[in-house]
Length: 421
Ligand code: PYC
Figure 1 (cartoon, rainbow, N blue to C red):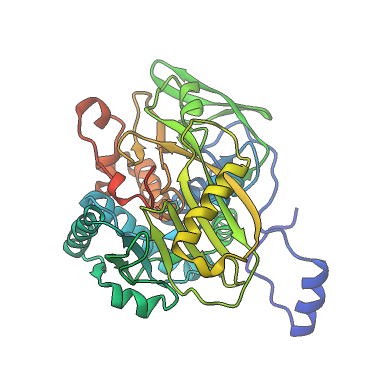
Figure 2 (cartoon, rainbow, N blue to C red):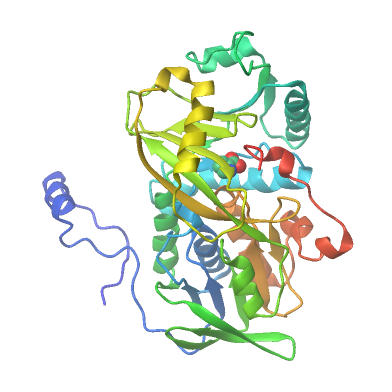
C-alpha cells in the first residue's frame, strides 16, 4: 500500500489535469487490517476522535492507536453542524475551554498543513429583550475576565457591521443590543475532519471506517478491549468520542450517562452575492445564520423538541425556520432553500460536556456535546490525549467530569446556547 508522506507537489498543468480526473491522487489516509491489539482504541472518527488520535501521536508519541467508526470520517455530527467557532461562553470553565479551542483552530491549518478555511469574521448574538441583554452583559464580563474579546454593542454599531439589518425600534422584535465577539467565525468542517485524519494517518494512527463497535469488554472493573463488526481488539484504553450514540456506546461498558439525544436541523439556501460578513444569532427568534464563501446562507435553529436518532430534515422545521428568518431578514424572502439536514445532539442537564474518567478503569469519555461539539474538537482532542498519556485529568477539563452529576457541581452553560432549546 502506498504510504502517504509529504503532500506531492505538481506543476500548474499537472495540478489541473490530475485535479480534474483525481488520477494519481494519493489517498489522504490508508486502509488497514484490524490488528489484535492497540495501545488505544478511539471510538468515533469525527473531529473529537481524530483530534484525540492526532494529539496522542503528535504530542505524546503514542501511535499504536486505532480510530474506529461505524460510518465514515466526519459522517456524524462533525459533518452535520453549521461550522461555527466561538468562545463567548457564560461560565469561566466554559470560556477558558472554548478559548483554547479557538487558539488551536487559529493555527490548525499550519499544524496540519491543510487549508481549513478558518474565517474569523466576528460573531453577533442579538438581544431583543432586557433579559437577553442582561445575559449578554454577564457573558461579556466573564469573557473579558478570561481575556476573551467580547463586548455588548448598540443597535447603531450592529448596523455598521450588518448594514441590511433593521435596527429601528418599530420592528416586531426590536434589537436592543448584541454580544459582539470578534474572534468568532466559521471554518470548513469537512476540511477539519480530513486534515486531522490525514495528519494522524501520517503519524501512524490507523483509521478504520465501517467498523462498528458492538461490545466493550470489561473485567474486574477495567476495560479489556472492544468487539467490532470486523473482529475483536484488545486495548488497555478505550475512548468514547461519539456523538449521537454516546450513551449507547457507554452502556456497552456498563457506564450510564445523563444524556438525551435530540436532532438539530439546519439548511442552506442557493448562493447569492456576499452581503453578510458576520455570524448572526438570535436566541429569541431561534435562528443563526452565516454566509459561506460560495454565497450560500447557512441557517440553524433549536434542537427538535423530542428525543430521536433521526437525521432526516422535516417540513415543519423548514416552515418554522423560514418564519423566524424572515422576521430577522425580510429582504431574503425570495431565496430558495437548497438542502437541509440534521445532526444528533447529546444533551446533558447542564449543557456542558462529559469528559474524563469513568468507574471503568481505562474507559474514558469525551461526549455530551449538545450543540457545542464541533467547535470544541481541537481542545477536546488535546486534553483527552494528555489524559491518556499522563493518566492525569488536565485542569482545563476537570470541571466536566461525570461525577459532577452525583456531587451537584453542574457547570450551567445553557445561557451561552446560540438559541433557546
Ligand atoms: O453554539 O454556536 C453554537 C451553535 C451553533 C449551532 C449550534 N450551536
